[in-house]
Image 1 (cartoon, rainbow, N blue to C red):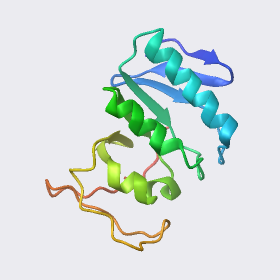
Image 2 (image 1 turned 45 degrees about the vertical axis):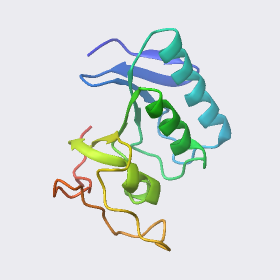
Image 3 (image 1 turned 90 degrees about the vertical axis):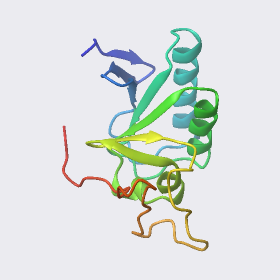
Image 4 (image 1 turned 60 degrees about the vertical axis):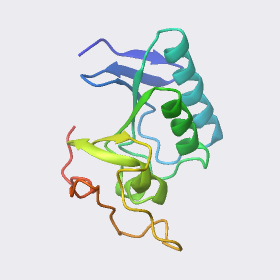
Amino acid sequence: MAERKYIHGLTVRQDAKAVVIDIGDMEIWDGADLSLIRDTLISMIRNEGERSLGINMQYVKYVPSGFFGMLFDWFESGIEVRLYQPTDRVAHMVWFRQFFLLEEGLCYALHDGSLCAPVLAGEEEDSTWQTESRLGEPNRRDTSRVL
């Protein structure tokens, strides 16, 4: 594993799939946190040439409304995006279930939405309904914790 760096309060590390950004044990992200993450991603993509990025979501319960849109914008520009260890609250968000698929362990990869069944209209954001991939694999997270 590569050496950890600290960028404006963020921890950045390299794993086998991506450079992983960790904002620490904050449960609720606000606009300033989103801005910090966005600026860090911009720097890593433009200045360091990174093409595969991840974000540790181990403690996060609430994210700003623009978070998933920002990730999808990067995805559409050719960047691989992964979320690591999302909490149940994040994993049950409609947007998450529509656009993230479990790769392995607690790592989820962003995709274009074509691999999952559509999210039902009127579905509650915190419901426990799970999508299934067209390959027949459930899109649910393992409840064991890997630290």
